[in-house]
Amino acid sequence: MLISKSKMDGHPLVPVHDKSTNMLISDDKRLIDIQKEFSTKFPYLKLEFYASEHGSLEGSPASAQLDLQQTVREVRSIHDEGDLSINGHVKVSTLEENFSRKYGLNVQVFRKSGSIWLQTISTDEWSLAEQNRAGV
Image 1 (cartoon, one colour):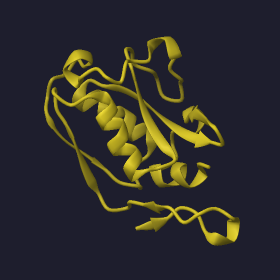
Image 2: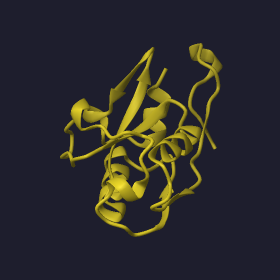
Image 3: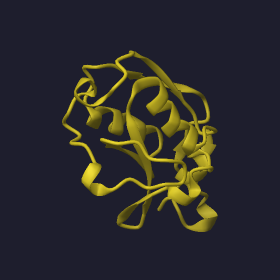
């Protein structure tokens, strides 16, 4: 387990998983459940789901954001079921690509910055652990 903040920098200690964990992606799962499961592992990060793909280092427009109450079946183009392996060493760009390529889901990782959530566009090459450590 990695520690994302130290007492020396005034932030609380936050565990970040460096061991691989699996998230089941299935047609019956709601997007909000995937979002919550991810944020449990990375408390300063969240996933948002979009109707269209985005390129590397590109953002997604708010107008394309999907309703989190929808099921995976309703929004994806590839209907394979399986476990998506996630750990703190995975780069944001790799995670987003894996969601798209393996499961037909268009996602963006957001990082908490104070009271707002920022798309991690310019830092997509950072690992999930690095992103989580930068969140406040």
